[in-house]
Image (tube, rainbow, N blue to C red):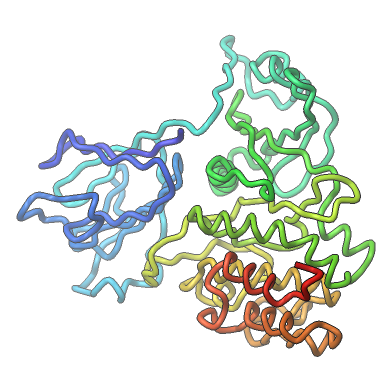
Length: 415
């Protein structure tokens, strides 16, 4: 199991440690997490810094602490005046943490230790430089003893995808590797590692399965389930809008998978037809894929929210809070994105103008379903309109409640 640890190496707590084996939001300070009890009279701020942990990855954000937080001797935050937590400067940002990093907070010096999330593959021992030739890499590593490398089947984003055959049982899988041009980019590496870290904690029949992941000769890889049927986007390009019965059949399983992810403490943040995959050609179900932008759920502390970064997500499927301030993103945000995908599947268009620039997209509300699909049962349209509400507080709180309401509203023969 992957693990992230903070070891107290200097100061009044020297010798203590805090271990994380699942996704968690953690506040370090005198009045921070109940898992941390600092000595009486400690000079650390009440809320000194926040951690978002998704083992073995983690990132840190100073919370306007009085004396600042230091990573490897570099100051990453400090309160300029006695502002309360809710008045943090907008530019306080997150810092990615890695194995061996040292954090100074008040009198405490902490060291980061991570246990790998990987099925370890034996690295080459003869000093051979980075192998871009996957066939050669396979022949010289343990991967080749477990899998037979076959043809490349896709390339896009930051990775290339190859077909694999597992030697033990002949099962066909896919190998996803990071392309060399992105392998030296910390942000791209973080996305790749985030997806594998999340998928390692999710096992559901409607979520694309991760079998193993790791690093060989500095090449990051993941072995995943093969979905032979393409994406829902390809179905829509070929057929256009679909009847309600088919739309529900395609998506209800994936909605169940999303409900499972929410219950396990993750939000997806990039739901769209391209990320819903058909397990086989001609299948009428989909699996939820691409968790590169996923993040663990966190307490609703608005000042701790942070943008996903430029280009994160796809604007025409994103709710207003994800487009505007990122401060209220939660499971309800995934509800909007999933409903927008179902809306497009039924009507042939997205809920807001698809050609609107992202800067003005938040100005538009979703068109009510029955304006475009007047034949839709009124109860189903009402559920969809709720899921697509502009105000996130008016939506269903998570995918599970959305799924229940949708199934209840469907005509008896479609449930």
